[in-house]
Amino acid sequence: MTLTVIAHANIEGHHFHAMKSSAEKHGYHLKIFNGKWHGLRSKITTLYTASKTEDCDLLMLVDAFDTIFMAGPGKVMDLYEKHEGKALFSAEKACWPPHPVVNGRYIHTVDTPWRYLNSGGFIGPRKLFTDLLDKAWDEWNNKYDHGLGDQYFYHCLYLDNQNTIALDTGCEIFQSMAHHSLDGWIKGPDFIENPETGTMPVVLHFNGMTPMDGYLHYAE
Image (cartoon, rainbow, N blue to C red):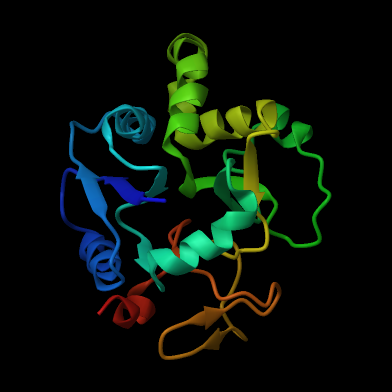
């Protein structure tokens, strides 16, 4: 199985180099898409383009400016194996955007607080992303309020396709850092352990304006 990591960035600021250097440190094949930025919807266009043009089995999309990789693709493959065939999205504690229709459609059957989709990190078969977006593209362009950003679209895509899309509610691969304190977390020389799940996530996503300056050494 081959894996390509993709991100959209048309500037190289705001901790972009932390994402890039940590990906290179751990041996990922990283592809940066730098087309004109049209708001958060550009990340959907990036995924759609990559799903049709990249020569790989799996695609992983991450946010370019607030992500740090903690381990390599071998660990990702091992953790993803039980989800093989599905798209696996990061999960977070709060539903954003707080759209009542989306929020009301979630049925919670997990025992962790990370239960809502987060679009800042996900992995899955390249061809599956092509199929999902082929089916949803016209509706996305003509129906959705693009002002709500990409995450609203992915909420709807997940809720309509739970047979092929799952959430990483155990924070095994992806760790959303928003909406909670890191006090009490175990911070080793090359890992961070989530005490609520007992996992050491591979991809740290400092979303929701979570400060990441104190963790940049992990990217070195």
